[in-house]
Amino acid sequence: MAIAMVGSLVAGCGGTSTENEGGNDASQTEQAQTDAAATKSEAADSGDAESTSAAAEGDTLVVEIWSGDASKEAVMTELFNNYNETTGKEQGIEIQLTVSSEVGNLLQLAQENNELPLLTDSIGELTYEEGGWAYPLAKMPGGQEFLDEWESKTSEYGEWSKLEGSDDIYKPIYSVGGPALFYNKEMFVEAGIVDENGEAKPPTTWSELLECAEKLTNGTTYGLALPMQWSGYAEYDILFPGANAIEAGAFTVDWDNQTFTFNLTEPIETIAAIYQNGYCVPGAETIDNDPARSYFSEGVAGMFLGYSWDIGVFTTQYVADFDWGLCELSADDGSNYGVMCSMGYNFLPTSAVAELSEADQEKVMSLIEWLWGDEVGKAYVEAGLIFPANADFIELADESLVSEQTYNLMEYLAAGRIDGDVWDAWETIRNNVDYEGAGAGYLCAQIIRLSQGEITMDDFTTEANSTFTEALKLAIENGELDPEVYK
Image (cartoon, rainbow, N blue to C red; front, side, top):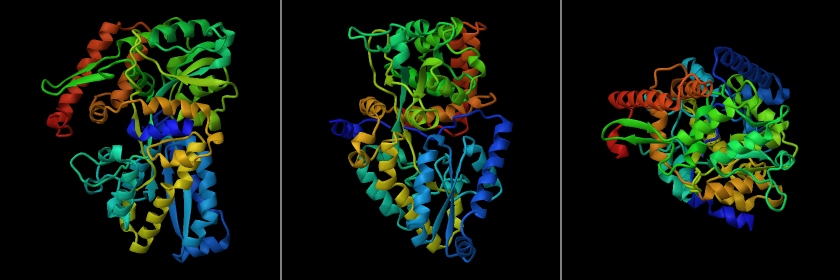
């Protein structure tokens, strides 16, 4: 029954799974460079002499793959090792995987030094011709045929795979994603937050979230783990889940008058109140995303505002060894406007493939077909790592291996909504904010200021709307956004 239920996902919404999940300071970037270099060196030095010799002679194409998705690392490593020993050995392909939360920065540096990997799941926004590192699949041998077949399986998302103003498909959608509130059922029962049957009763509104956070806080445990130090905190813990409770979405853009307005009073005031009353793990302003995850998985915090990929995190990286569930947060009047979904991508070619021979490009294309194929997709679904845009993966998956939480969130996503145009514009607008870390960093800082009592909610709204309106106008002035496209 669960398989049949999530089969409707293709008619639902869209998800991102490769956002930077850590901080962005220089030391982390430098360490990521060191780690990536070490990974490449170890991979080059390992393996038998025959494989190394074959690679040197050009018989084996070594394909470096860079990923920003640590939640998939364990499953990817197993899949890729098996591939190298079987299909890869037969076809003369060897995968070398590097996983880093700083992959975006690494790609920029690699591009400057002409050392890009051949495949990555963190692709640039620019086209290849404009100097970005993304390379259109349609230019690969057999690439257009692959895209045509893939689009037939994800027809609802075809248009979202194209870059604005281009017919080339750089980003065919692979998965969908969305936010949810993760909660520890055992802690809820202990705190007396239960229904008439004595079962854990999760919050359904933002005001109930505040009430639950208070009841879960007792001096040794806390209501919520808040990663205020994380660069993505304002988006993934506020904007995305906050949009579920707002009919107009997290923000509104008036394209005629070129103004930007946030609609997030309720969720932001709730987070500020949780902080001010001590219902979150202390020192939230210094906590990054991974430590916040560990506070939840270790039972220090009873709730965690997470994204779809966190299901895989809590089953592979920071294992939550207790009964836990997911829920949505709706408006206080009970209105549920649906999960605000986004889209995720799988590994795609970089501009480095343009330097390969046609024979080697064909090898890369065969690897892409495998990476997007049933074996990998099925493994990801069974591990709870993706919510596929291709429903075939769900039908192939062993239902007994798919977690209850995965099916639970799939149900939310299937009833969700895409506000694709305005979210595409959001990325451009936020990047024009004159602040270190751009708009995402600015929002994090403002929410911390509000939580610490330095500004009021009215101050926050006035300053944020003004800041993002100026960024909107700058994006339009620079030609990055055309208002007519969004009207």
